[in-house]
Structure formats: C-alpha cells, structure tokens
Image (cartoon, rainbow, N blue to C red; front, side):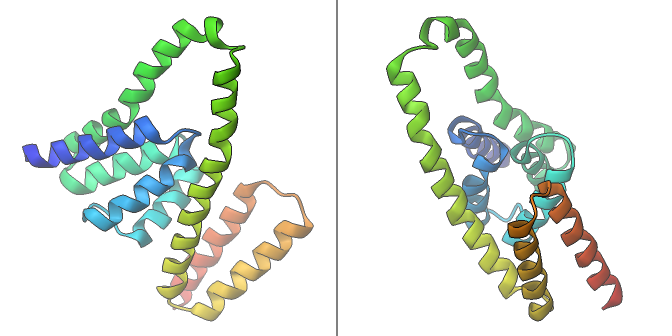
Length: 180
C-alpha cells in the first residue's frame, strides 16, 4: 500500500510541477500514466476529460481524484489530488511574494512566451494519440467519423462555445449506447 502512495505521489506531483498552462497541459502526463499503471485506460482518460470539462475544477485534478479513487479508494483519491495541487500551492505562494519584483523582467517574459508553443505541441501530440485510440476502439466507426466530421465543419463555420460541441458529442454517444 505504501508503494501505491509513493507511485501516486511521484506521478501527480510531477504533473502538478511540470504541467504549465492549465488543466489541459496535464494531458500529456495523464496519457503517459496509462502506459505505466493500470489506474485508468486511454479510453477512460477520454471519458474523464469529457466529464472533467463539464464539471467544476481543472481536468488534471479531476483525473487525479479519479485515478486515486480507482487505485485504492477515498484516501488515495485525496492523496493523489493533494499531490497534484501541492506544487501549485507552494509555487503560488512564492510567486505572490516575488511577483512585484519580477513582473517586468525581460527573461521572465521571454520564458513565458517560449512556453506557449511547447504547450501547444504537447497538447497536439496527446490529441492525436487520443483521437487514434478512440477511433480504433469506437464501436461504430462510421458514426464516430460522421460525428467528428460534422462537428469539425460546424466549428469551422460557427464560433460556438466548446461546451456546445462537448454536449452534442455526449448526447450522441449516450444515444448510440442506448440504441445499441
């Protein structure tokens, strides 16, 4: 059991420490966990992302809670969540103290500017991997491609809130399961 707590701590403190840029920046790390542990599968990660997107709280924290719960129950869920939040809490306190001093610093501004394309590249790799995993494991491949194509076209023609597309996909997936 101690080994489980150490693994959860190691994985989720790394996610909290190195996923700069918000909840979706945690996705490359969360996807990598599926290769090393049986806490959740890539398909479950996709479902967790969908649920975490429409529930309060950052995606990474919601997934950490789920992974901890699945790995060992409520106590491990709290531990995994705390492990992910701990670096942000410590860094937040330090940054708040130093913010005034370094807010106009050229090097700080440059580092933040350079991190944006790196975050986009990491998210793109995860998106492609999750897309491949879900299309391959889709029960109805034609339906999946049709839904994807339709929503892609609508998103290019109309500027809607992303929750709209997620809601449509969720409803379509539920209908597909109920009708099958």
